[in-house]
Length: 341
Length: 287
Image (cartoon, rainbow over all chains, first blue to last red; front, side, top):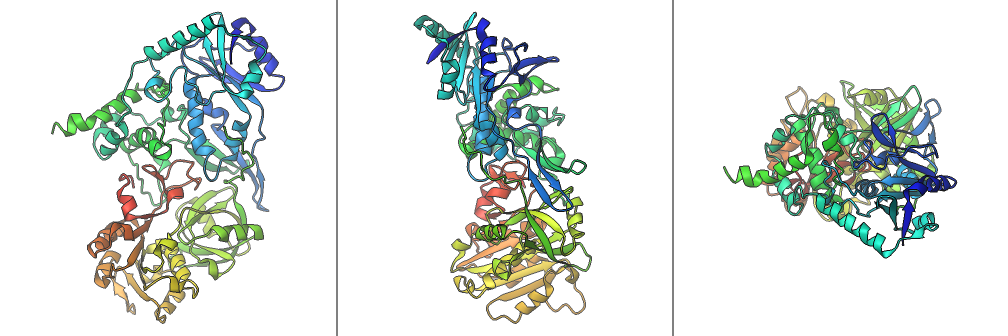
């Protein structure tokens, strides 16, 4: 069902939802927009063409989280699993919603499901805001997503100027929007045109067809050293990535808790073994791991690309490394360099 | 959308207690801990899943966790044995444990040896250094009168740098008296009163030349030993599908979630640690 939500009514609607749900929406903090709890006084940041800096995965998988509390002397444990809470994440971009579904395949499927992820995911609705003005770092249409894709979303909003056109995509979302006026045919038509134009405005930055095989074949080649040459190894690309999920488990002895922290394959100690052997001793191997994981290993794991083209790693890399160019170069290495020799 | 949020917490260790603790090596870098279960329900759940070749995360609160291969067979008793090399802060603290001390354990983790596929086969077990611990569990499993008829000939080749570093000495000494197996021990350099093999494991393997007929070879050891033993077995005629090894990597969760132990698309903790050489050959060289 499609509805019309006048922008002037948005605050009242989110306020009404707040009676039942914890509503979380992008708001300005410092220089950046971030997903924060909504209050009627909140100033929402929905007009920015790009994403929040901090990835939405943090709302399900916090950067640092105590998972166990222990009593060392008697060996007693306290489980710190969260209770499911009814939440609405409003204004999530389609690339980020898709990323949440990708992380479901890590934390919520198969054996040993992650109770922390499951509890936060169970009663959270994702209300998406499509991107009618994708920005220069976006490449979702090249990465199995798109500015108006619906994967993972309970509803998708299209900005029609004074109003949003709301497509409710789940029963739970239908309940949230059922009080609104249904959209008429002309409004639905203009939303479709806008969506098509946005989709078209994004150039194809690489061809996925056959890319995995090309990357696999150059695994042991020098191209990775070339690509990693200017990398500082700061790890920001992985921390801000909405699909990166690596974590570390550490004991905080002073607080008697076992804590799970985001970790990154871009650090040397990440794979350093007790014997001092390191399977990824330099930035060459670590850069290769990051790119191959997203563009090759994810395919083998779940048949999907491990990147949604959100562009955060491009936008925030301190030395301007661009994953689009890196993937293009690695993909072309075989035909350009190896065959030329 | 996932709806099952009552899944048990896979990061929560079960309570264990040290039953016995003793040094394995004369340099005191290797110590064996035998752990008993605090709760019967945990014991039953553990042995229902356990298979030689699997590992556990031993957990010391305030220190952290360390992944260690299980060095005992299920029939040996209601305990789990680990032989621990002192390397970092967790293994150092594990070395400090005494009988009666509590600790946590998560596991069994990983796939273990594919015993069902090995039924009726001759087993050639080749180990070096403290990596022999999971092969010791395998040998103990096979030796049990109920399990022994399921396999053909059993040959064990075990090398260590010196006689002082040889683990499970008294038990292995008794294997020379068994008529259902062959045992070959080797040390790197000659020592007085050592009347077994002298030399590196790959050379000893070539010298003994086990037959590849209807056989599988299982190799666990330091990377340098494995590197040279695998081609030695190939040249003896073992096909890559009949050669198995167990890998190690830095691990945290042990469940295929924390990311760091991957080789290509495989996680050592979940898809391994046991792989055939054929499987390894299909993976990128990220070891």
